[in-house]
Length: 144
Image 1: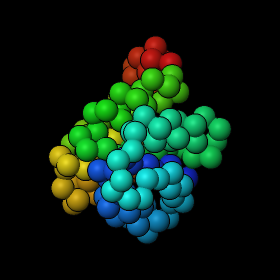
Image 2: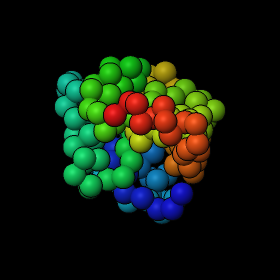
Image 3: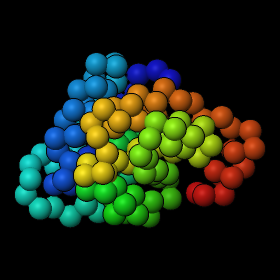
């Protein structure tokens, strides 16, 4: 996959990981649209999921990354939007398969449950894997 515009956002658990992943993405040639948050003050994760979903809907970004403490809450919030296929990944294998089989357009990570290096591996894998299509396309079409 070529260079893309990637929207990234986190709640208060994820600004440090978000910054590290943003740097990785820029070094890989992507444009990063940082939608917050940038500090440890408590915020509401659904707002950040909505911000990434809006960026995908209006074309400001082609793909996204969301981060909260576990990745669970922000995944639920993101997947309320019919055009979002947000996948919580814990391993590069998860990241590869969700792109291949589910055409996920948002990678979700848990800042408190994943190490930085594994998160970076997930990002590298997610954004370098193309959707396989074929039998999976029919199933993905049923999601939207």
